[in-house]
Length: 379
Image (cartoon, rainbow, N blue to C red):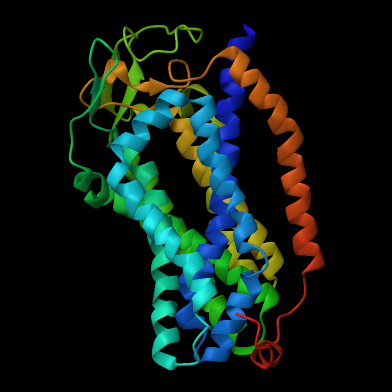
């Protein structure tokens, strides 16, 4: 097999890993922000919840940068097309995420209830909206996106962005994403919180995990009736990196299940998802939040790699010009580019994982509300 093809496959897998890391680490913080007003019944409890993720939330943003950077460098055509297609959605995502660091910095600057309540709402919005958009994006690409290219490679968008946001399947995927984030965030609040905060977080986290399981199963049934995409002829993985002049693609119901029928081992992926979504709440119910948190992470692995396994090698299929759909084969960067990126990733991703693990280990332990309230410099 050509080295170029191997590099394409490796980067498709790495993209899934980076998107999973983003979902687990950033999603955990988003989940805490979403739950802030519900697990904290007074200012001290809310400050405690913020102090639990305070040392880590900005470091976890590295996964957001890594995910976007990987798409930009490894799949430049996908980056350019997706960011253009979802431009309005991306702006909404960025504005909602910008609210969060501002809320962290300004919430406790004024000792006034209305002031702090306003920023608590900002945490809710900046936690829930990005996770809904994140999940909805997966729902959008699974249904296909309306775009095409002209003969000179110029991109054209053929559908309104409103349909991307408001169609039922995408919204269901968005709620699934938010439910998993609530589970992760609630588990972290149990791990480092205590008393009423931990007890309230457990209820929400259990509900989030079980809701995610129900939606995941519904989505699995729904996907069998959605028109997926499939090649009508044998494809050369070493094809030129251009969406023009590619092999014919057909849209038909159930096509996203073809890979699972061809490679039955892939059914392990949705099984992992269900295991994490059901097992996580059970562990929280048994007051084992660390195991529950890790099972929530496994749930994310199952969900994201199930979507990737169903779509492979498609990355962003086109409903208006299926033959111009973006795939792992025709949307990647050069072999030289992918090789150098892989070398850097093999160095820096382990460093990031090591530092993140070290930071959580050093700052482990319970966060006490009385300590937070007595500290004028805490969140």
